[in-house]
Image: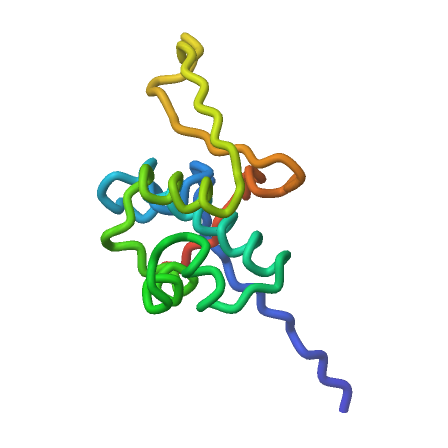
Length: 133
């Protein structure tokens, strides 16, 4: 008996990502949420690089340890972009803000966060798989 197994392939539907997961998920104020996520990522990288405990990081940033814990768990309620700027300043980081006209070929203006010495923070994931049940 020579039975061949048939390979079945599942069709996978996907959508191109906008580059902002918060916009893709239709979350309110997606640009702000994406900016906050990037800023918190940078705060976390600094804490790791300097091998600080949450208590040490809290003291330097001028907040309490439970707030550091919340930040690191990405619980960002109560943390504005401006407040995150101040936390980064307290960690010894300069913040530069550049305002420029958007290109005419883009529909709306955007917010971008760039970090020196971190080449992949602004990497855009070209596609996001989306299951359809």
